[in-house]
Image (cartoon, rainbow, N blue to C red):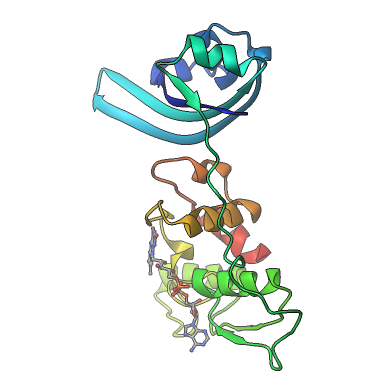
Length: 218
Ligand SMILES: Cc1cc2nc3c(=O)[nH]c(=O)nc-3n(C[C@H](O)[C@H](O)[C@H](O)COP(=O)(O)OP(=O)(O)OC[C@H]3O[C@@H](n4cnc5c(N)ncnc54)[C@H](O)[C@@H]3O)c2cc1C
């Protein structure tokens, strides 16, 4: 059994004291930190409507020593957590133990090509990824050369090369959050090195430093 804490609000000033989230939640619910066995942040957003009072709002999943009593005594804040079915892109695909006669060829190692290759690999299928631009470290040097001297490579630049067009972006993950595939995509980015805050931040972000690591690992 798990509990959903619908909106746990923490003033930014308290967070700056670097208190552990478990301590904050425990004192709010009249528990000791040891009573909280599991704490997972599901959502986090910043409320800066009043400049003098800035808050973070969290949605949390908790497992405590006595969930039933806690639910009864904090019915205004807490409810039973209902786990949503996790969607995996391979769910609806069954190769029935067979393989492609020829490995599929994926053109480009941007997010679309990389995820296509990952899903095929998870299905035990080999594929070939063809990328016109350079490997990500070489690409970074080529992009720096462009910035320094204006020397432009048609094949490897901000748009072309391992990792795809967003590798040198400011890394905001601009997409809806409701489609069940999005959770899968974000979990794979975390698996390959992105910070796990992208799973719950309202405006998730992966910087170029992480994107390069991810491109290298995938
Ligand atoms: C400068 C910039 C900043 C951006 N910032 C953001 C952002 O902050 N947040 C956000 O969500 N989105 C951002 N985007 C958009 C995001 O990068 C794209 O939505 C995303 O990269 C699309 O993924 P894709 O795999 O479809 O295509 P791409 O990422 O474009 O990948 C295509 C890949 O195919 C390769 N390729 C192309 N032609 C060939 C060929 N003939 N043979 C072999 N390989 C080939 C390319 O080199 C590239 O690696 C940005 C885009 C740019 C250009």
